[in-house]
Length: 299
Image 1 (cartoon, one colour):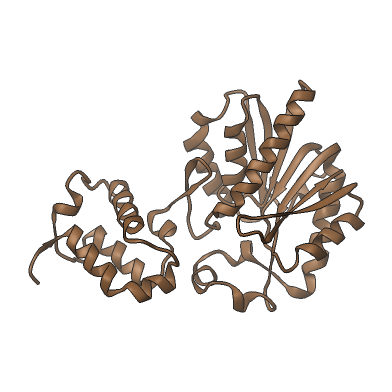
Image 2 (cartoon, rainbow, N blue to C red; image 1 turned 180 degrees about the horizontal axis):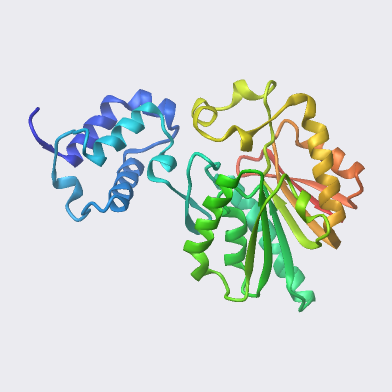
C-alpha cells in the first residue's frame, strides 16, 4: 500500500463508505467525523498538531485503525471515544449507559427554570432527585446550572451505570458550586428513598415497549445500548409507570414538580395515568421536532 496522509485516507474512507456510514450514522458529515477522530486521537495521547498531514498505514496495533474498524461495524461514535457531549459538558459513557441525546437537554432547561423560580421565592436548600441517572448527565448538568447549593440524589438499578455517573461527578465537580452535593444510590426507581422529600424529581426511564416498539428502534441503538435502560415488557409497562408515579407523588413537597422523558406513542396514556394517581396538573411538552416528549406534572 502506498503511504498517504491521514487526512486523505479519511476523505477516501468517507467517500467509499458513504452509503454504509449514512445508514449507521444518520447525518454524519466529514467534518464531524474529522472532529471525532481528532478527539479520539487526543484521548489516546496521540499528537494532533499534524494529525491529518502525517503518514498513515493501517495496522492492528494502531489505535487509529481501531477507530475505523469500529466505525464500519456501526459501533456508536460516543462509545468509540468513550465520551459524549451533553448540554454544556463532555461526559464519560460506556455500553453500560445510554448515550445522552440532545432532546433531553430540554428536560434540563425546563427543570433549571423551575428551580430558579423556586429560589426566587425561598431561601431553603432545594432537594432534587434523578431517577435512572445512567451517566449522570441530567443531574450533573442541573447542578452546574444552579448558582445556589442543591442537595441532589440520583438512582439507578445498574451498579455499572452508577460507576460511570460517579466518574463523571468526580471529573466535573469543579464546575459545580462547592456547597452542592450529589448522592448516588443503587435501587430500582426510588425504592430506597421513599422516606425522603424533594422539590423536583426528574427521570429519563426505560420507555420503549419491548415487543410493540422494538422494530422501530434504530439498529445501532438496539445492538449496542443497554436494554435495561431502553425496554420494558409490554404487559408490565403501565403498572411499572403507575408505581413510579405513585412513588414520585408521595415524595414531592407540595407544589413540587416531576419532569419525565417518554415515548411519543405512549406519552398521552402515561399522562392520564399520572393524573389518576393524584397530580394536580399534568402537561405534555414537545421536543425540537414538535413531537410529544416530556411529562410535566405538579403536586
